[in-house]
Image (tube, rainbow, N blue to C red; front, side):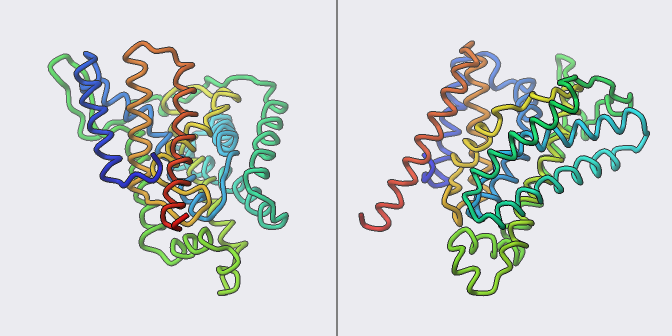
Length: 319
C-alpha cells in the first residue's frame, strides 16, 4: 500500500468513505466529521514531524514520551502562572525541541541506527517522567485554557456548533510549516539528500550534525505542538497516555508513502495516510468493532505498506 500513488491512495479514501456512509448512520454527519478532525489533529501534527525524520533516513520512536513531558511541564507551569496561550506554546515547544536535540546528538555521535537510540530514549524519558511524577495525573487547568475556541462558528439545525477548531488550526499550521520546509527551503533539499545517501551528502559538504539537530529538533517541535493540542482536547495529562502511539503515527506516515530507508515521500501522501488511518479507525468504532482490533489493523497496515515498498523498489531495480 505504501507505494500506491497519491491518486490511488485518494481513490481508496473515497471508496472507503462511500462504503462507511452506506453501512453506518453517523459517518457522513457533520458531528462525526468534526469530531474526527479534532481527535486526529494530534496524529496529523506528529505525522508531519515523523515525515521529516523519515526523509532524513532516520526514525524517531521517542516522540510520545517527548509529547507527554512537554505537556506535563507546560500544564504544571500554567497552573501557577498566567502566561497566556503564547506562553503555553513556548514552554511546550522549547521542551520538545531540547529533547529532540538529545536524540539528534546521540544519533550523530554514536552513528548507530536511530531506531535503537530512540527506543532507548523513549524508555529513558518515560522512566524519568514516571519517577518524577509518581504517575500522578494532572487536571488543574486554568479556566482560560478550558474555553472553546472556534473560528467561523456555525450551528446546524440540531444545535451542534462547529467551525475551524483550535486543534484543526494548529494542525494546519504544522502542515504549512512542513510544506515550506520540505518543498520551499534549501534545508528541505538537504534533508532529502541526506536520506538518499548519507555518505554522499557528507562528501558534498553538508553538516550532518546540523541536519540531525534540525530534523529531530523539528520532531520535538511537533511533539510540543501535539502536547498543547492533546492537553486542550482531553483537559488532562496522564504520564503514560500515549504509550504505544508511535505505532499509529508510523503507520500513517508509512501508509502515505514515506520510505523507511529515507529520501522518499511527499507531504500530500502523509496527509492522505493520516486521513485513511483516521477513516479506518473511525469506521471500526462506528461498526462497534473492538478497539483491540484497531491495533491489529494498524500492524497489518505497516506490514502491507513496507511489503509494497520493497516490491516497488525491486521492480524499479529490475530484480
